Image (cartoon, rainbow, N blue to C red; front, top):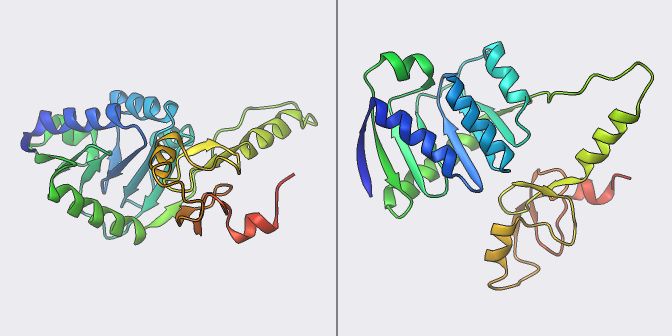
Length: 231
């Protein structure tokens, strides 16, 4: 299915893409300045464990947006200095549009776009281009929020570090999951893997650190994590 969208429909369908995402959502927009409603949808997706990938162009994020990003545990943020494309998608559908992820654009501009379902060849072509944009972008580190603690009391920090070590990555899709070297795939990817049950089938990420690395269910870690286990 391919459907033409006007301004309000573009905004609505981007929201639906966030709501319906099960594993991953990719948001590509040169400028980002979200409405309160869009922020809530991002937070909802984060709570469901959806991996959110955002690619933007502008050099410095607004403080309010940066603070939102600090609260998203499953966010991968990228900067692409030559970005002009606007594209938003999950596993099932995609919006290709003239609209930035910018509240002003949604409320004041005349925009248009198309909604494309994942069974269309156009969807696959656009995903391939989006992956090329991601590969050409620089990953931006976002410092996550930390709870304030009394001076000299290291127990909360130790607990936080222990909790972080207890989280790993799906070796196929990089979704955040529990760290378990015997079960390094998320439920969705495990269902796909279980059709053949090949423990040496090549995967894409380290289960411990999430880095791009040729792994497998039998060998779920990159060389660095394998050689330097965290106690």
